[in-house]
Length: 323
Image (cartoon, rainbow, N blue to C red; front, side, top):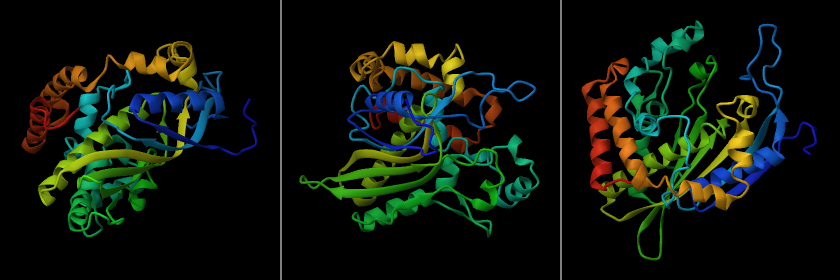
């Protein structure tokens, strides 16, 4: 029983694989997370909670030693992961309004109907006050190409004069890359991220799948700049809040107590189920989702976005990248 003393605990998680880390996170939160309500809890018209259960909350430091080891994918997802990977790599950046327009709308409370940011737009087209944009991803790989040992290859997502007015400011806050030479003379690209808040059951694994695809893309960029062999290394992250929502327990479509706690009492049982979702088996589904994405008129994709989707599909098909 977790004591309700107002102190949210910090938990370390280290695992070889993404599914293994996911099981550890969910198991720790369920058994040791702080019982807590959230701003997103479902409520009745009079403001009473719809869900009788409390959620769980914890701060986490997580290391995934080999994010591309198999099985790589947790066996379930609450999004179409191929489309989400494409979003993290920039396919929807064109939906974000210019800085001045966005700032005015944010201050006027009108921004919630738009796309105020994508993670990739903040990383590759960071909005500066003078109206220009900064490609932080390029600057990071330029710094690493010049000095692989640097600790200064960092990127941020926060734009306070916009984000403080948003109901949902970016959860991803910070990325650091380091390229460390191993005994074989290869550069190992380490990625570290920092997060404001994450839904552990419904979002964490999809975030990590997409960001490690970005890590692989940046490793490829660094290879082209240095002409050295680049290995995708560990992925680590710090979380101010990883949580389970009350509806994760009480919504029958999610039913965390049965679908996770009841069905997967051990890490090994979770990994065994994930063996059906290796990168090889998922590639067919991801390619199909990317093909569908390119045909969706909702997003009004410009030619460069459609080219990005096709390049991503070709990269997976050719084996240049592992999904």
